[in-house]
Image (cartoon, rainbow, N blue to C red):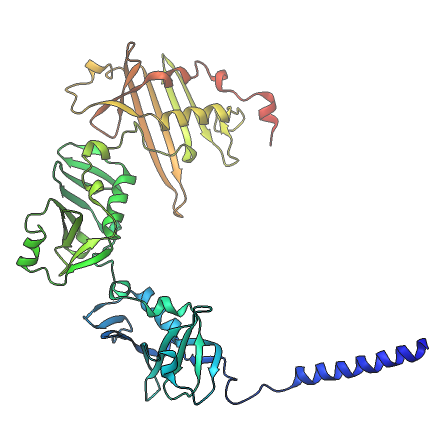
Amino acid sequence: MKFKTTLILAVLFAGLLAVVLFVDKKPPATGAGSEPKLVAVAAADVEAVSLRRDSETLSLRKNDKSEWMIAEPIEAKADAVEAEGLVSALSDLRIERVVEASGGDPKTYDIPLREAVLKVKGLADPIRILIGAENKIDATLYAQKAGDPRIVLLSSSLKSSLDKKLIDLRQKDVFRFESKDVTAIRLRAKDSRWEARKTDGEWFFTSPLKALAKESQMSSLLESLAGLRAKEFAAEAKTPQEMKARGLDKPEYEVALSLPASSREVVFSFHKAEDKTFATTSESTKIVVPEADILFDLDRKPSDLRESKAAVFFSWQADRLSLKKGGSSLAVHKAGNEKWYFDQAEKEEADGSKVEAFLRKIEGLEAAEYVEAPKGLTEYGLDKPTAEIVIGTKDAASGRSIEKTVSLAVGRVDPEKKQAVLKNARFPWLIKADASFLDEFPKVQKDWAATTAQADVK
C-alpha cells in the first residue's frame, strides 16, 4: 500500500515539474498588454519637452551647446537638474496596468486633462502622452500615448513631474560667480560700511579699521552671495521703472566684489520692502526675490567679523614650539612618529599631552580688548617681553607642505583684570587676553619631560 502511494505521489510530482519547466521556458507573450513601457527612449536623445495643461504651455529645448533652455512662456535658462529630471521621468514610462487594450473611450478617463510632448532625435514625429484623471484607489494616472489604442495606468510618482511650474524649472542661481576669485569686498549697509581685501589667502579689513577678518565669516558671506537663488522673479528686465518700484534705485544694501581674474566688478543691490527683499546685480537683467534672507549677514559690522584669536593656527598642525620666560627657554619638535622631543637626535622625549595642551591653550586665546594703533611698545611692556612663544606649523593636506610660523610676545599683565598684552609679530595692533595661559609655561625642561612609561611606549 505504501509503495502504491509513493508511486502516485512520484507521478504527480513529475507532472507538476513538467508544467513548471514548460511555463518557465515559455517565450514571452506578444501582442496587446505585453509591453511594460508606454514610452522607452533614451533621455539623452530628447531634444525638447512640453507640458500642456488648461491654457498653459511650458516648453523646454536644448540649445546648440546641449544646455536646457525654457522656450515658453518666456525665454530663459533652465535649471539643468530639474530639466533632466523631468525628461528622465517622461522618457521612461512604465505601465502599472493596462485598463483597456483597445476600443476604450478616452473621455471616460478624462483623457486628456494634460499632455506631455517629447521631441526625440531620430524620430520624425514627437511622442505625445495624454494624461487623464487620477485613479481614486491608488492615485495612479490614466494615460494614453497618441497612436496607441491602449488606455493604461501610470505611476502616481509622475504627478510631481507633470505639476512642475515655471519657477521650478528656471535656473534660479542667476547671480553665479566663483567666490575663490574674489579679492576685494566693499559693503554699504544701513548702519555699516566697510572694505576688505584678500592678501596671501587671508582677508584684511582696510576700512574703517585695519584688522584681520575671520576666514569662516568672509567665506560664508561670499558663498551666500554666490549661491543666491531666486524664490521669485520680480522683473525680467530691470528698467528704471522696475528698479524704482522695488526701491533698488536707492538700495539699502550694496556689495561690490572685485574679480580681477576676469577683469570685472560685480555689484549686488538689495532692498527690503514690506515682507520681501528684492535683489539684482550690475551684471544681471533681472530683479529677484531671494530664497534665503541674506540681509542679516550684510548687517554685521567689522567688529563682528573681525578675527578675535591672538594666533590663527591649528594645534594639530603644529610641529615646532619654542618658549622663553623669566630667563629660561625651551624648544620641542614633533618627529615623524608623532612624538615630541627636546633634541634633534630624538633621544629626550617630551610629554606630548602637556605640549599639545599648551598649544590648544594658545590656539584658543581670544581678544578681550584691542589696542588698534599703539604709539610705542614700552608702554605695554613689549619692548622687553616677559615671555615669547614661537609656533611652527606644517599643512600637508593640499599635497604641498606649507610651513608657517606664529610669534607672540607677551607684555604687561593687569593683575586686576588678569589680562596680558600680546603682540602677534605679523600685525601692528595689540590685544589683551586672559593671562591664565602663563601658568602653563614649564619652569624647567623636566616639567615637560616624558615619564619612563611614556618613553617606553613605541
